[in-house]
Amino acid sequence: MTAKEYIANLHTALRVVRECSPRLVWKFMYNFGLQSVMNMNRFEKRQKQGKPFFPAFLMISVTESCNLACSGCWVTQGGKRSLSLDQLDGIITTGKKKGSYFFGILGGEPLMYKGLLDVFEKHADCYFQLFTNGTLLTDEVALRLKKAGNVTPLISIEGLEEESDIRRGKDDVFERTLAGVRSCRKVGLIFGAAASICKSNYDELVNRNYIELLAKEGAHYLWYYIYRPVGNDPHPENALEKEQIQQFRRFVVDQRKDAPLYIIETYWDDKGNALCPAATGMSHHIAPSGALEFCPPIQMAKDFINADASNLAHLFEDSSFLSDFRSMTAKTSRGCILLENPEKLVQFLEQQQAIDTTSRGTVLSELRMMTPRAGHNQVGEEIPEKNVFYKLAKKKYFFGFGAYG
Image (cartoon, rainbow, N blue to C red; front, side, top):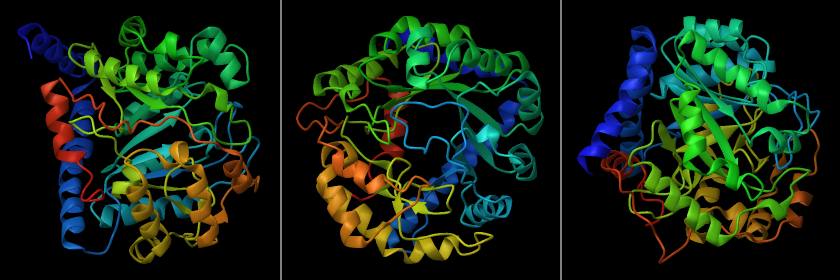
C-alpha cells in the first residue's frame, strides 16, 4: 500500500467520526464491531469443535409487503405474509443467547412492517442493518433511527433515473430514494447504499463517478451484489456474463485501494477464491413465513419457527435439511449453486421434499425454468485483495470455516 493509498483509507475511516455523533460511532464500534468479532470467534470455535450449529448472523425478512415491484426480485409481488412481533422478538432474543447481536432486516420493504422501530429500540444492545429501498425513509424515520443509535440503513439503488424506474416498476424512484439518502445524511446516520449488478445497470453503477457520487451524498459504504434472476419476473437475459463478473471483481479490488467509502461484497476471500456465506454456515435466512431458509433467494424450506420462535435454536441444531444443504452446495462449487447449477438445486429440493415458503407458491416451477448462468467461482482466474485492511479482514473471516475441506 502506497502512502497516498494509506492516507485515502485513513480519510475514509475518519469520515464516520467526523460526520456522525460520538454516540452513534460508539454504538457501531461496540454493538457491531466488538460484539461481532467475539461472535465470529465463538462461531468458528463451534464449527471446529463440532458443537451444535447456530449461524453467526441471521438475515430476517420481516414482511413480503413492498411499495415497489422490482424485476428479478424473489419476494412475492403483492404478498402480505409477515412475521409476528412475537416471532421477531423471539428470533433476536435467541440470537443474543447464542452470542449473535447483529441482524440483517429485509423485506419486502421492512419499513412497511408495523412496530419495527420499537423492536430496534427494545434491543438496544444489538446492531441492525436495515435493507430498504429508501422511499419511506423520511426525516422523521431517520431521526428515530438516530435516537435508537443501533441501526445502519442500507439503501438499495438499482440504477440512475431511467434504469431505476424500469427495474423498480414505479416512477421517480431514483429521486425518491435519494430523498431517503439525504434524510440519513441530514441527521448524521451511519448508512450505506446497495446495488444488485446486472447488464442493464453495470455501466451506470460500476464506475468511480458513481462511488464518488454516493460519498458526496453521505454514504459511508457501498455493498455490491451480483444479480440473480429469480422470482416470478426473473429476466435471465439481464444476468452478468463471465467476463463481466471478472471485470467487476477487478474493479472492486482496485477501487478498494483509495475509495472515499467502504466497498463491500461477500463473494470472495482474501485470495480471490469464491465462497458462499450460507455454505460456510456463516449466515442463514428467516422468511416472513417463519421458515428457516438456506439464503434469501432460495425460498424452499422444511423447518419453521413456532409462535414465539422459542424453538429456533433447536431447529438450527437439528435441521438435517440445512446441514445437507450446506454440504451439498460446498461439494458442488465454491460459488452460487442458484446460478451455476439450478438443476442440481431442484433435484436436492425435490429429494428433500422441501416446502415453498412464499404466498405465490410457484418457486419450484420457477427454479425448474432456470438455466445455468455465470457465477463468481472462476477457478484459475482468482484476483486477490490488494488493500491490506480488506485482506486482513477477509483472511480472518472469509476462509470458509472448513466448508470446502
